[in-house]
Amino acid sequence: MAPRDYIIDPSAYDVSRVIADITEIRLWNRQRFEMEQLTAIVYEDHSRGLCVGYKDVTPDEFWVRGHFPEVAVMPGVIMCEAAAQLSSYYTQKYNLLDAKMIGFGGMEDVRFREPVRPGDRLVITVERIRVRPRAMIVCRFQGLVRDSIVVDGVIKGVPLPVDFLVQSATAGNAHAG
Image (cartoon, rainbow, N blue to C red):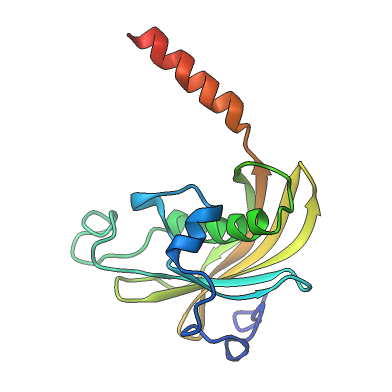
């Protein structure tokens, strides 16, 4: 993918026109507190399988103090997490996998092109490539700061066995006491 090969040209959406705020995002995504990596959704095109959202990167992010002291740079894994959360939001809203919760299934061809710093707005785009209901969704993603692509790649989401995980956690807590 060439550095200026946008999934969707930034002129095609308006980041000031929020269609889903954090309250709406929380209806579809279970991440809370420090792990919430989306601020708003600003564009959806279900027929093309596109969704655009953003993360306002603040000086209060949990990673700022230590990554790296005096030169805060958003960790690449957090950029990928933001893309995963946007993909999950889209997948859950349109019930593409018929799952209670979506988790990471894998990543391919991820490239970090420029640093993201506190004060930046990381605009993320996901584009559905393919869906296997109850099995996997594959999306291409990009993160932009201003008009520069700072991260891109392919992300895979899979259904998580929520009931099993809850039962395992409950059983583990019972044995710990």
